[in-house]
Length: 125
Ligand SMILES: [Zn+2]
Image (cartoon, rainbow, N blue to C red; front, side):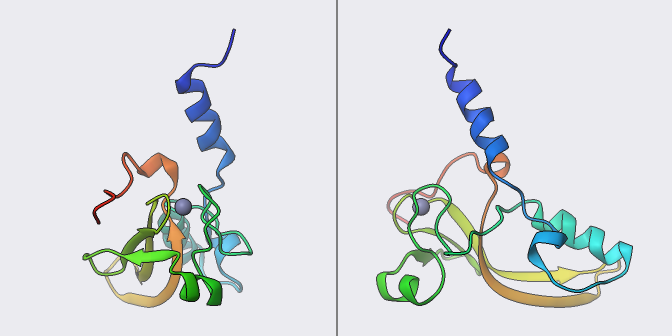
């Protein structure tokens, strides 16, 4: 029996690794802070070394992206999408602890994990 569309989609989601403290940051911090980062990063796909879109392979980050425009900002601050397949991503990240105290921020294009995406950006965006 051929796999159903649902099976294919689930398989695809399982193939995409979620980001985490471990895969994103170097160094150490207390367990509480690590949990905050783990939760935050789990919404995103681990970026590959070439900075390519995990969906279509268009380069999102780095000099090539700057030259060919692989990532397009949306109107909402820090949000954007792949210029080719429109998969959504966030470029500006702000981290806060449990009490709302700022831990820091970072600028890096991270694509949303398929588990959190119901539709891609409109082609008119
Ligand atoms: Zn793409």
